[in-house]
Length: 522
Ligand SMILES: [Zn+2]
Ligand SMILES: [Zn+2]
Image (cartoon, rainbow, N blue to C red):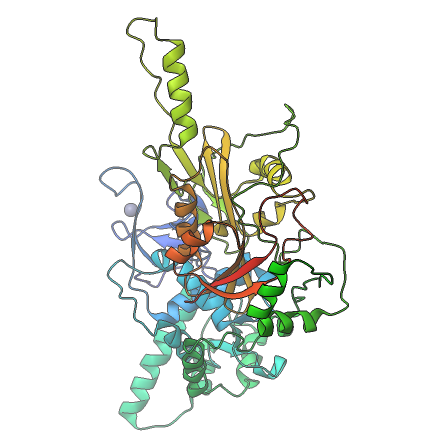
């Protein structure tokens, strides 16, 4: 983006109101050099919808040959990307932060990972060690632009913006000025430290406040870069419980209830086989017998069941339907606009539809020139509030009673719902960040008659893509053939959990109540 000094009488080309010098929340058309408020854009927001993201080569609708606004992503240096991400998260997801600080890996790197295509140009190479670059950049620009939370938490890795009120492009400008001042100093062989230099530059700005000048005096000691390189190395060695753990984030750990009576031979055998791992888990939760609690996002209540326990009487009142929205959905978890569709598919041929086609053909066999009506596509979408009643109803019917999946609306990015017209035929959910760098697949379900045609496979593929860079775990009943699908995707059985489904499944189920705990390492 080219930032040209603007005089205070600049007006927005679309609304004719003044363009504010301080918040700079406007784009400059690179043809006519006029400014346009982000809020005045014809498309309602910049591509990707990041707050204060003005890093585009923008052409306004009057200058564009086809009359539509054009956005070409600027080169995005790491400083700029991280400023943008922190500014966006502090505005849109302040709830994620810990006392205003975000974790470089859990929050910042994960956000960049999920939104890579929005942030960077297509030609920007994704290097293997880019996460190390993120932590390195944070340390490098500390304390001038990023503030470390080490002094606050006595724990490294937490960051916030030094000047939370300044938009990313304002800080980028400050940095450019700081660099050129330093260059001038080098030529004159004078030495002034960066803090003083930055203070000098800030003093020339109309937006400077007393508070900002105070900040420059009371910087925390910067964190060294080596610490972070070390952290990255460790995490690559699959040390899964690297700090911060869930405990340090004050999120309750999942608890499992111990089942005391095991009599059948199979249980005994399995216990022998997996003695150590199972006992570890049991000791940890001895005497913690709590009633089954649903809706706890940290509670491991995965099913991944192939068989359903029992089909209760099908009430006609049961709501089966959902809808597909046409507009993007704002995710409260990542503050990103999700597209209305993940995928549309007209090729998948579930046995249920084949059966229906055959029936229709039979009914109409005496009608001359009758043709099968065109089949609807299968829509793979993110969860939306309208889907909840139907999915809850399916869960209660096929799994166990009391399930409410409303919580998944808090992180729709990690969901996949499959619709045929308005009929919900499948769904799958991941709970993000159940542990540091670990997601958990809570439910995967496909209606009978719609199975074995690749629907679950695609949902799983989508969820794995969404959770890049993090381990994914799940429980699956030991008698469930879905295990083969998981293994195809690289999941490995880590432990056997006896009687895992005891408190969930109905007694008349044919499915084994023991589960494999599987992990896909990343
Ligand atoms: Zn305007
Ligand atoms: Zn223009």
